[in-house]
Image (cartoon, rainbow, N blue to C red; front, side, top):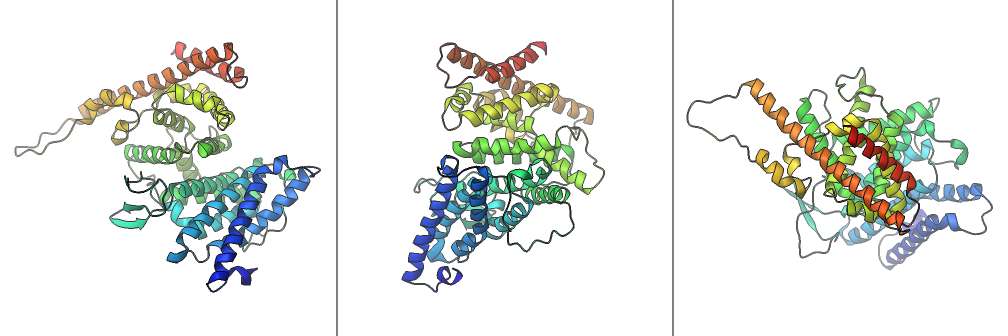
Length: 443
């Protein structure tokens, strides 16, 4: 097979690429529909088949993408990248992956998709002459013009990377009896190590290294600067997924899996962990804080409860959206003070919601003007008081807007449910929203 798909150019390569593309598409469609496949006696049969496809993944990547970089194959390689990432994501959603597969896939992601993982999480510049996600779009990063990889590819690569890393961190919770993996060919040496502890460490190190490529994760950085940069990163990462409904809630639920593993392990004010791994865990948990992400998610929706309602009643996103809201509402109700005290100020505050721009414009207009006369310094006590008052205002505004959004959602869901117009039974969600409402009235 290596000889067949490693040709030297010409018509044979074109035919091989066509066959390979169709084969990958067939595998991807099969994996997506395997739950409905007839003729398979039990889940063991399905797992055996999926394991064989998993073992094919490294070869498929090699056959498809090893010529990546040659101009003539740019569009083809991007097509293969998309299809292979879809296949890998579907496999990861169908079956729990074991330690060897997870580590092997992380290596493959670094080998074939490293540029996508570390591509800046910035908005694509306006290019009206091109279709969205066109492979011919260009973007300017740090003064250099780079070929613009599809934002869709970036979403897929980062999602798969996070899923593999978080799965390693949560490896001890997975029940291995559901997955009997075939031997995976890998150069990874795992002799005499505990998969659970090694997986947790490997997953955290992978996430930490990735975060370090996007945001400063140094405990020596001033707390306010670190806080602002980490929130900016979280918001940019969230924005990457908000316009891709089919993966949005898979992504949000994936981030919650880390919180489930390390729930309540670190107090929010703890800034001096005891050792390196605790330091890494602190940074990862801080940046992926579920209450912060939930606040930012609502803000990105402009606190429009109707958008949430549309997600809930959609046949594509309804179940995953309901699951995300249920889990977030539980976390919010269990950590009410943290939910009330979350705030954003600085550059990001004007991006979060058009509903807040008029209110926040007063603070954003404050500028330090150069002066030819003696420099007048503001007493530190007054500066702290001003910053504290400003943060309190933003905190209050974000809490009130989030509260209004969720209470309006509760009312809309209740109205539809009373008229038998809601597509499924929302009583569990309504009970969680009722608990949220009770806490609102108490505070």
